[in-house]
Image (tube, rainbow, N blue to C red; front, side, top):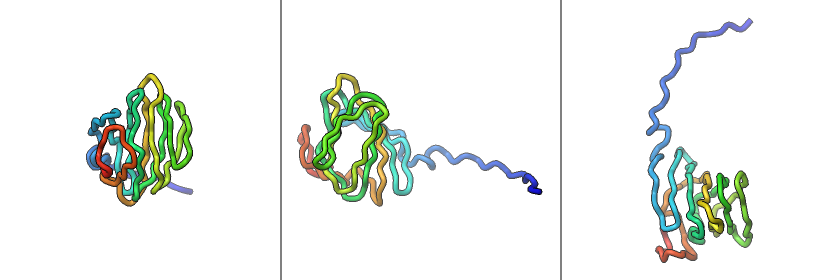
Length: 138
C-alpha cells in the first residue's frame, strides 16, 4: 500500500525570474509587441498590428516562429506561400525562411508568437523589404 507523504510546498518563483524581460511593451511603426515570457530556447510575444500595416519581409538565422491569431485577420507570407488566417488559426515559420505578417483588416490584429531557437535577440532580423525604411538589420 502506498502512503501519502507530507511534502513541504515550495515558494513560487518571483515573476522576474520566471519571465526574464517579460512585460515591457515596445512600440513599432506598425503596432506593438510585448514579451509575455522568456526562457532557455523560447520566447512568447503578444504582437498587435494596426489595420493596413505590415511588418517587414524578413528572416531569422537562429529561430523559428509559431503564430496564433487571437483576433483580427492576418495575411501571412512564408516563403512563396501567402495565406489568410482568422481567429484561432495558426501557422509555422521555419528558421531561415523569408516571412511577413500583415493586417489587411479594419480592426487591430493580435497574435501570439512563440519563438524557438538558440538565439532570440531582436538583432537576428534580416530585412528584405520594409515600408518604414528601417535598416536591413533590425
